[in-house]
Length: 137
Image 1 (spheres, rainbow, N blue to C red):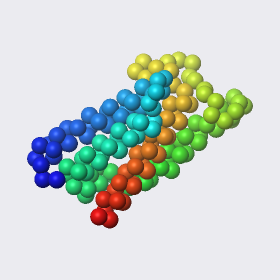
Image 2 (image 1 turned 45 degrees about the horizontal axis):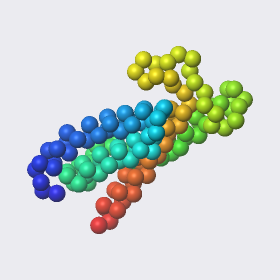
Image 3 (image 1 turned 30 degrees about the horizontal axis):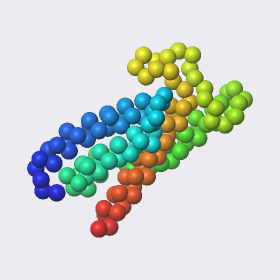
Image 4 (image 1 turned 30 degrees about the vertical axis):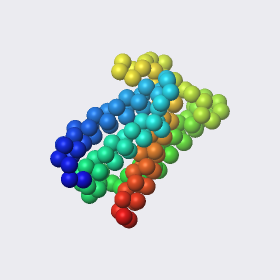
């Protein structure tokens, strides 16, 4: 797009939307939301940036292709599900919690790491699909 206002606004909106997506990720730790919705908000922040500043400019923000986020996210989600089986000999995807809560985040457990894995997978899948469609047209 050639709109100066959208281009300038998208440069400010990208970091704000990414912070908001992390807020949704952490909020969903206890309430509805979490990794899926936070990942969609993060991906849409990059899509807005790509619309305003061209796809090549947005791709330069990544050090690697967004598709590489998928295996990292899947591995993290799988490990968070296997951790209770290994440590406590309980069933797959049973939540384990640290005894002490962290000041800024609250109680940390395997569910948070599962949500982070989902977040990475959603960002990777969404941006890979959108970047591929944008390149072909």
